[in-house]
Length: 295
Image (cartoon, rainbow, N blue to C red; front, side, top):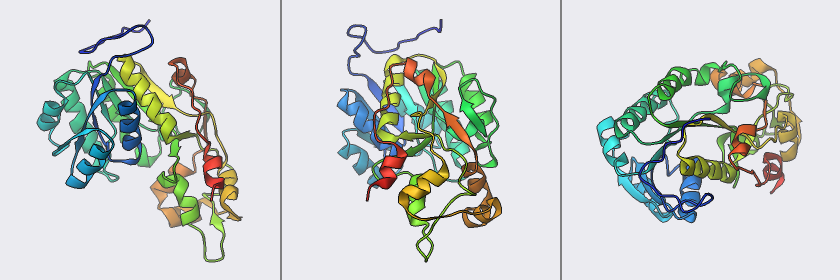
């Protein structure tokens, strides 16, 4: 049985948690904004570490307290984490500096010594028709940097959970889901990634936000937790939900999208998210196919 560490908060009965003080990064982003909304709705106080005034305005509108600063400065980040009951890291730069950002936030979390929720991704496990948290990792080039960073997280001595979302969708957002309609050719065709026979593991952004709330409230060191709805459509099914499709060869997809991104999207992956469900998580939002079929 895993050891449970509860710090700086009280429980009101077995199934409810008195409002926690939660500090997080990435609150102005697609996933982070959904997490803030879920936490505030559940009665928690959220401090959002952001990097600009515009981001501060966005998280304030969601009900969080914004603090603006440099997430690449571990001392500043640790200072903002102080006084929280738990922290979560969802920020990403979208470029090669994300690994440096992760290391900075992990260093700050170690200094603060609080229960820590880190963000990974499903591509970590490579081609696999039945991914679980115990599956061997075999990431594509695009996300190979995660392995040493997350080994540092898991050996940090912190109470750690690493949430690994599938391909995130919902509310017209998600860079991968939105790429189908955006990539229509002049003739009206929707280009697939490869021939479209590969499966993608998916999760709705609002269901994902619920899982973050659950693991933050538990305050346990859960290791990896895969956030997968159990809906694993093929890329062809997703493309056909938008319109007429145009298959590509893998090399054509690499030329169109860039080799690292294309190779990640060419992975054939399926997952059920069983471990997350044992925590009381029940994904209930529309599937990615349902989202794409909507006008």
